[in-house]
Image (cartoon, rainbow over all chains, first blue to last red; front, side, top):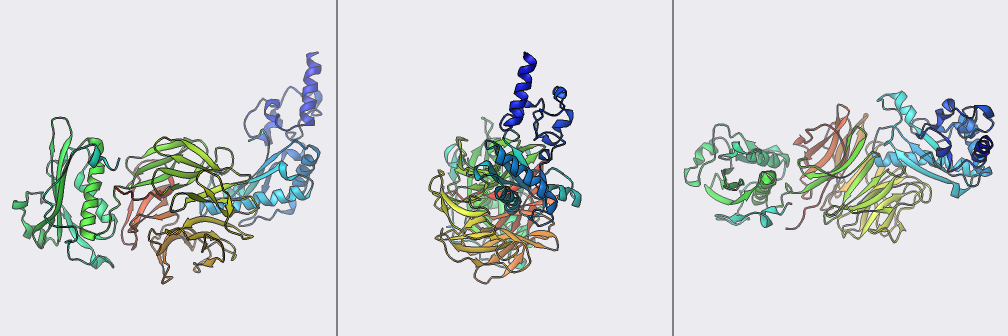
Length: 171
Length: 424
């Protein structure tokens, strides 16, 4: 009985994975990209009942869109990724995403905040054109304030020229 | 705190023999040749104090760029009738500060100071006060204010405060300190970034941008009660707050309609009104002191440059043309100039532009300077400069001639902004 209930819960979660992602995972941090790899317990369902947002084999588990220096144009290589999230949002009307734009650390903090906003807006625009609704998407900027890479060289800066897609419960 | 002399301790004005206007007959405008040569003699008895009063006074005066500090080595503070004016004159001093300290039975220090005109051999002003050890720095700054005001005829700013963000490890603290970085205390601390603190004109509140909600939100916090309120928490990003000169409104940057644009809101968060209308980025607003203009950074011309437009709306006028990166403008408190960050050959330096002549002057040659703002009397500019990977509080005189670093401690300082001069 307990097993049936557990499976039911997992199925429910995967069907409307939105604000319950944190409870469904035994990891409470924001490392959503790696979460699936270590997930245990639902091995019996063979990934079938897995939250597609966290399934490392699912494109939806990919959440970062990178940009060229001084650019906010979404590169072609991220088209499939963003379209997959747009489709997910279209099919899961309760799901919501926060798009956080980031920049490298050179220049004015406030101007960088505005540049990061552009990178978030670019991803939002593709999402909205591809099926997501306005109330499901919030585009914000972290500017240069939350660098993922801390180095002072081009590879670190490139890592930080980025928009992250976070679902409700992941931020 | 800054009024302590007048409310928490005894203040006796002594021997004011000459009115303030009868200051030294020295031209203070211009370069190095026109500095006021002043000597600050060690105060008798100050060695026993936790703070070196004469050193604080000297540093205050020197940072303005208006004074040439004469070496006082070997000479001491003397009573007026014993002062050997010729000794000081031969060292090139035109003015002399002397003082003495005696300890009171209750543990406070009774400090007397006099400012003397070496050429005329008269006392210009002086006073005494009894202060606790915590009040010593404030007392020294007050001495410097009086010397400065007596000799230049304009208000001193050594008793004003500054605000900045200090990052230490993963913690971000919004701090308020004396203008020279001493006596810092945290207003708020977070594990998420804080940027862009802005003083209300009455010095009682600070607006800032916090990322504690995983997005930038603008808060206003009351210094006395630490009570705070989110005043701009709209969908998208909320940042770059500055106060209107009457303190009733804030200019903020929002992304409600896509890109970053400038809006006005009432200080309580009501009455949203869009000001700038551009398809690009408009950010970092700064009010002119008369409240009629907003200066800001915009990339509407293809690169970030500084513009100004009427607060009532209308056409924006471009102000910077040299280089392809000019950002972070702040008006001087007289509205005649603005200070900003200019990028040249990969270096981010402090620059100032005169609004009437449109002449720009580079004041620093550092690699990475940030967030410049004028002192209330416009004689100095506070900014942070990066040294060894961390931000250091710094002051440059408005003529670019005197630069001083203020930070002594660990931690990474950014977002420094000079607070207002409060009426006493």
